[in-house]
Image (cartoon, rainbow, N blue to C red; front, side, top):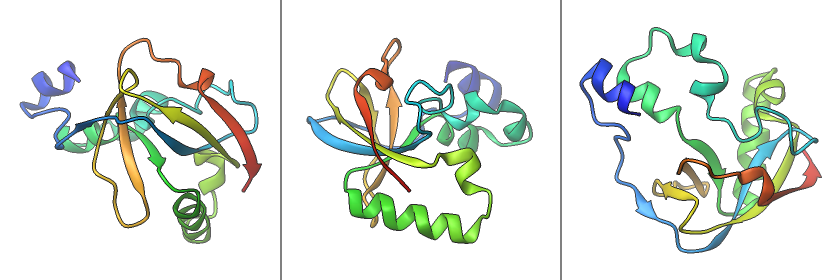
Length: 136
């Protein structure tokens, strides 16, 4: 985040973030919970995809996309999968759940579908907190 701040002269993260009060969260993953991309922000997973992006966009893609409600996660997954035929190849094929708490990071406000972004703290191992619960 510091590199983005300096390179683009912007705030990063650039959202109003809040501390986590322990709750259950959902994330799209691949079947093997240890798969390298399951808990890697898009910017870190595929930096070339964002080479021409501005600082705000790069910063936004440093958070992990999650949901607070299983219904919201499923509904949005199928909506995106119908709009983007290869969505499952990048986002995942399964749904995982886990308990987030204050030591994991800071989060953005939820939207209408219960989606929020997690800016995780250094050395957090989310794969140890999440379990694959179903195929999407």
